[in-house]
Image (cartoon, rainbow, N blue to C red; front, side, top):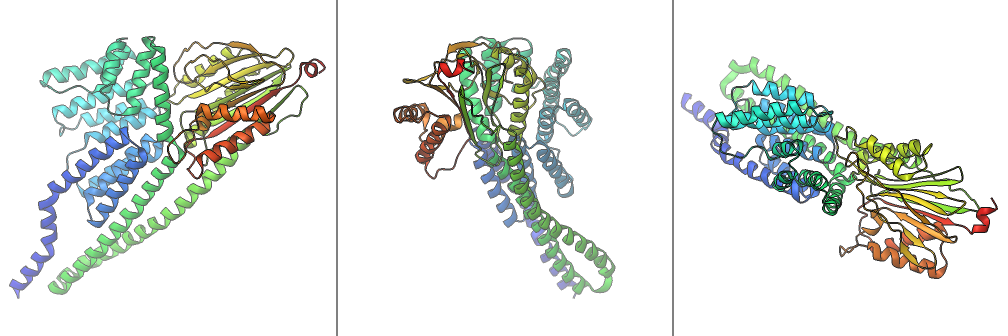
Length: 578
């Protein structure tokens, strides 16, 4: 009987023994998978990275892999941070830390966790909190010399994110990092981002440009290159890099990516809850078998564990129910946010003899980052149109602040360059999310037809009179991107019977199923058709342009917010008779 009992217990423990033998291979599999996902996230597409995380989650679920669930949680935190969901990212990261402590108590701490938390705290303007966490981490004795150098490098980056910048403090931490490199005879490269900050703070912009090329993350690489180009007065390259950066961040930060990220996190919680439930049930069956074989010797311990399992099962099922509720809440809150955002934009278009005006906005998702505004003061028409670099809720908030600043600064200022400069000063302060807005601001004197305008990285408006042309615009940095940017006012006389069309890049960059853009050419062709047919009232022009781009893209999903603003200038006689 004793021999059979030993054999039975050995069989019950065999799966655990097999798992122990394959732990190293399992970790290697997920680590390689992790490297692939990070590369895709940094250089290809957030959407594809989310899909790959879902594949990893399903694989971990099928193979009951605790390490797999740890990696999926960590990656989900990473992608939530990259699309601007900072609170969700911190929550998921703390969950991954807790999950690791419970399931892998003897595993060495991951240096990536502290790198990640430093990025989150920096993006949220909490650099001091990051430094405190890193100082606590440096007290641990488990780190290798390479790990300690990496932690010191993170302290440098945390200081670089604090406003106002304390250069002396950065140099102090930078010196400590290089002291550690020399004392440990470290032959590897120091953290490239830290060296980029050092080059920037020491005004070595050629070195900054060389270092930036080594950064793997596309958004970070572009930000450092833009800063270097700007200081080296390579303006065209700086502006071109801005366009690439804007296209990339629009792609990463759009509302669909944010929703996919949130849904991925919720599905992770649901799958993990189901997995833990299944594990508990399997554990219960095995314990039952042991109790039957071994008799009442273990009965008291079983009863205790059984009660605890019931509580855990109930908690797991409650989590599943909460996941469903959260999904429904997200959809509802986004619909409400869209209604609030749309109500902030003017939709009462005045009927006046001197001018006619009309606008439309069509967000690609529930909420967007486009804006427009207009009002009349002292017989001058003030108007603007803009496109925020981010999408979703962050873009909507930035859009709201931008519109409010436009109203505030243009209430007692008439020169567009001064309005835009004041807005840039305000928006570039403490801009930890590195967001910006392309903006066109115009002031039209309704008596003389004199249009003063300032363009900050925005598309050139279309002028329709006897022919169709583009308004000449200077290419200057978007608002909020670079401090102390020098903006310029340009002037032109707008003749009577002229229509001005302003738009965001959701119009010219609309794609069809063949990946072709509507383009500036498509806009000019439709404007010429409107001119030939006499459809030059702002509403007719915008509705015709909207129909043209709709016919062009067909059933292809809208990829960006689309906003248009049109102004028609009446006859001079009407103007002077006011």
